[in-house]
Amino acid sequence: MEFQLLIEQFLNGLQFGTMLFLMSAGLTLVFGVMGLINLAHGSFYMIGAFGAALFAEITGSFFIGLISSFIVAMFAGVITEILVIRKLYKKDHLDQVLATFALILIFSEGIRWLFGAYPLYLNIPAELNASVSLPLEIIYSKYRLLIIAIGILIAFFLYILTSKTLLGIRIKAGQNDREMISVLGVNIKTLYTIVFALGAALAGLSGALIGAIQSVEVGMGEPVLILAFVVIIIGGIGSIKGAFVGALLVGVTDTLGRFLLPELFKLFFDNADANLIGSSIASMSIYILMAIVLIFKPSGLFGERSA
Amino acid sequence: MMSEKKLNFLILIFLFLVPLFSILLNDIYITTLFSKIVILAIAGIGLNLILGYGGMVSFGHAAFFGLGGYITGILAFHFNNYEPIQILVFEFEGTNQLLFVWIFSLIFSSLLALFIGYFSLRTTGVYFIMITLAFAQMLYYFSISWPTYGGEDGLSLSLRNQIPFLNTMDPITFFYICYVWLIIAIIFVKFILNSPLGISLKASKENDDRVRSVGINPKKVKLISFMISGAITGLAGSLYADLNRFVSPTILSWQMSGEIMILVILGGMFRLYGPILGAFFYIILEQFLGGITENWQFWLGLIILLEVLYAKAGIMSFLIKDKYDDKTSS
Image 1 (cartoon, rainbow over the protein chains, first blue to last red):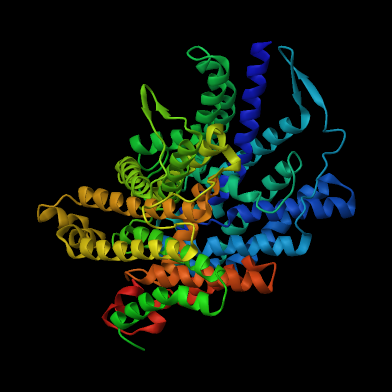
Image 2 (cartoon, rainbow over the protein chains, first blue to last red):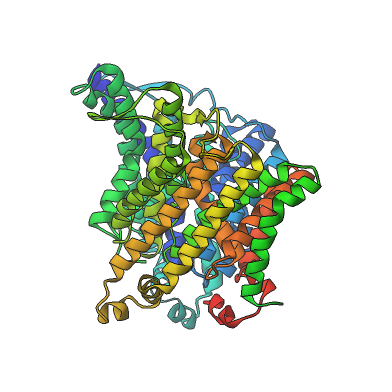
């Protein structure tokens, strides 16, 4: 039984990790390409979740809700980029932190204004709200498996997009030399808007996917945002591959840490103390992981240059 | 338009007179509100030393603010229930004497800053922002999951800690205690800035290599400044705990770090008194907007956004004109 539980926890970690990847992908692209620290990325996660809850309510279809989360967050991204973010690229990190912190306040209060202070619920359709049997007598939630599948699919899509398509080549070129690429006739402004909107849309989608497991409420994006920052710092800023590895590492460390550390400490302490110490350390584990990575590799696992 | 010196002097006089307004208007809440402003200003002065003068963007100063607060709360907690504090085999009595509480807060927050700074200063730029954030988050989650001192619910102090011959429960007395600490913080930071340490700190912000070439180790300079900054912010946290007679994980959260940072920038970096004006406008805005609309955070966000996009130099630059103006655009 222990073994099945361990695998189940591992899958939970994987699911958490792929969701974090959806959040981190946009964040790391926006930072890598435009050099922008975007604290408001968590707001798109929230906007996506609210968009999904709204459209799922209207149409009665969960899948239309998921698709609209992507679209709504993308539109919010385009508008934000044009109105505010565009003015921040040339400013220093401190200004970016402040301005996007202000955007969080604006988005959170705006949503509370529109939807009220109570959490909304986004219900998983019955056919997904079930368990499946996997080999080795493991029983696991269908919906969580779907999240893992979507995450891996999008990771693959982003890999193709950044390494095989013209858009990806332009993004990479913009990352290296933004003046040169605009001299070559690429409209850098539009390129930036596209990258930002894509990141926002992915954040929105992950917000909707998770909103269905938890609840859809104001302020849901910020805890995830901080985790996404941990992910891209561990993975190395600007690297999609780094974001993917970092996200899985963080997801699995956090989930397995909460499960295994209390067990580990039971070898040294009595039960109550072990649970206490284990769960306290587990709640810090990913930050410890990040600190260790930065101490040994100051620009992350796959970071090419220091920012 | 006036000189910076004159404005600084006016700020101090104004703050000194606050309890008088409070008595005249028969509203003691004003004094308590200004105690909060003064305390946040001290925290901001601490952060500004490394942020404005040293160019180190610490997004984790809530760690020091919160540690100061928790030390204050924990010492009082043990004093009240007569249980000694046990650390391994050592036992300590709790205390409610502010002088001891302050000394402990200063020592421990500077030690924490030494630890965090030692590792964080290996990185620069956005990695530095994020690693300081990560350390603060560690303490935040630790405080939530450790139940001895209230966990998520926080810890209440039944009475404020005491100083001989003074009644700290009296709002006006407590305000002046904070005021004296503000003056001490200003004088101390001014002294630091004019000392060889401060001068090399400012120089290392511009160019590390040149500082190294005259035989000064910039990392050591930054680390010592980081410790001093942490200690000042930690002391502010201690005062904050006594002001509210309550500590909770909120004061360790990343929003707290953001708030301290915002009031520094709102007031104007590179200026010693900037954080005081920043804290004043931030708290007054919060009170004022909170009074007229439930969605005050929306408007606060909008104001901060406009300030960052169009008036970077901070409030102090609106009020004065001087030689520093060219610096603020960098």
